[in-house]
Image 1: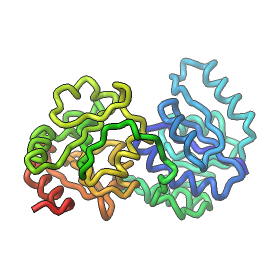
Image 2: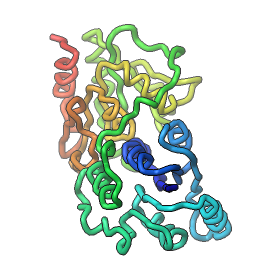
Image 3: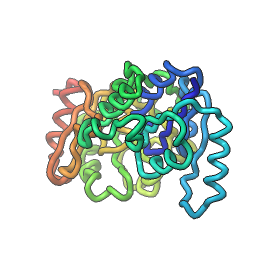
Image 4: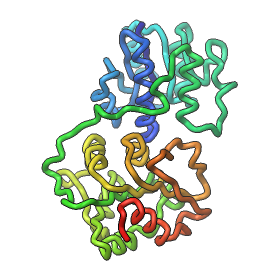
Length: 305
């Protein structure tokens, strides 16, 4: 059984998909992933993935590129397709490339009508588990992805020698206005007054902003850390605070203690980011989340009086 898994983006969704990929691989002889170039390295490191195909996500006007992709996929001799992206683009791929192959996804109304049963506002991990179960794939690990394989050498990074807090102050550029909590600088000052080191890990979109950050900024050769490097830092952190970003999903599945900050525009339950160790805090406007409340959660977790 050769399974093709479609997962094109985004970072948080890719991280959340690894449990489903493990379950798919458990019922496959070979598992190939169709993804995009930013996530090639992650899927290459995943032990449940045997091969990777890159989708350049070009517009429909690039007919020759889509034809080349179709030919590459056809050579794989795929037995089934599991669409974990479930977008209009992948629904089109279903019609163009995979109409004669068993297909699991929202677009497969005849082969596997998961779109009728999976509720739009359900937690994303529940949606993935139900999709797999409807495709007769036991979802043993889908709701709790195991990221123990995600490793990197961070011996060169200057991590604090005492318990430290990781901060993810960024978010996607499009969502910056309602996803970014504006009090991280004040939080760094408050933590410093309590002798608690704060470490900021910026993404590519925040590189130009790090000079204004008053805490320690972790970079690798003046570039953002790789996702495996971030994972290793999180394993050593005492606590993590961040906006609703993909890296907070990484923290969730690494079983970090921490806090995710939400505005009223997002339902935290849908994101599946909350765990026994990773809590959420929400206000109608993200700027209304009080610094004292966030600080109190950190102090409680670190046992600071």
